[in-house]
Amino acid sequence: MLPLQEGLVYGPVRSRRLGQSLGVNILPRNIKFCSFNCSYCQYGWTRTPPRSALYSGETWPSVASVARAVAARLQRAVAHHERIDRITLAGNGEPTLHPQFAEVVAALRTVRDELAPTLPLAILSNSSTLDKADVVSGLSQLDERYMKLDAGDATILRRVNASPVPLPRIIDGLRHLPAIVIQAMFVRDRLARIDNASDLAVASWIEAVSQIRPLAVHVYTIDRTPAWPYLQPVPGPRLEEIARRARAAGLQADAFGNSVTAAVSASH
Image (tube, rainbow, N blue to C red; front, side, top):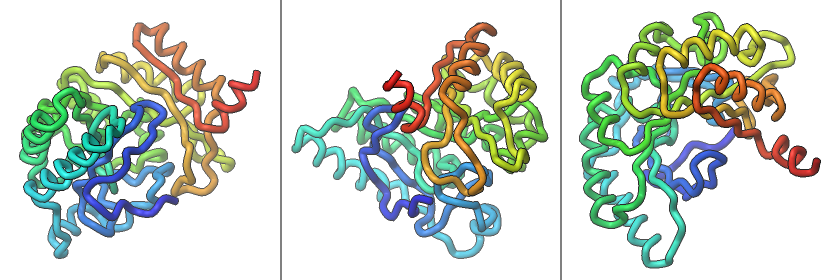
């Protein structure tokens, strides 16, 4: 597993899908803070429920401190002619859980517009908080919204993500959020307990995504040590097949294999 991000800003990180991404972590320090407990999470299991942590003395980064940290990092990047493709809210969990999420986004827009006006502001979100008007307002101020949906079946969603949010609520929230990219992580385990890449699982997922009608769909698999040690990456050819099936359903879909499958594909 990866260590938790220590600072407010990290990277830029080379992403398979997003290029050179400057990460912004607006979660409390020294804790993974998430509404899901995904089997594949690179930061391990979610051990502290977010609701209890809200009242346990955990502190959230202030709007001003986030803005200052990002401004300082952008100024350094400009001074050194450093390549950055986007600024991405991600970090140690689900960024939309920040109690002042919309205000954080507004402050980041101001910093971006002043120092690097061509850089897109993006987010990686698990789609669990779309019933909150302030979250939707903040999301609408971003340039790019990469929203998770790993399953179209409630049982598979629980096994892969341990989602406490009902699947219909997630789908409905995504349907009403404009201009999104669905990101779907496909995994299997050696014990056959977790598998969202089977034919039936993929069919139900495509049906759910077709209701949402996103701008695009990103199909990918694990590239780092996951929380559940028995998980395995889905092979590149299977990811391509999932993307092809999504395209046949009228969706704009692309597959992104992990570093191993990409290297194997490149050698043939």
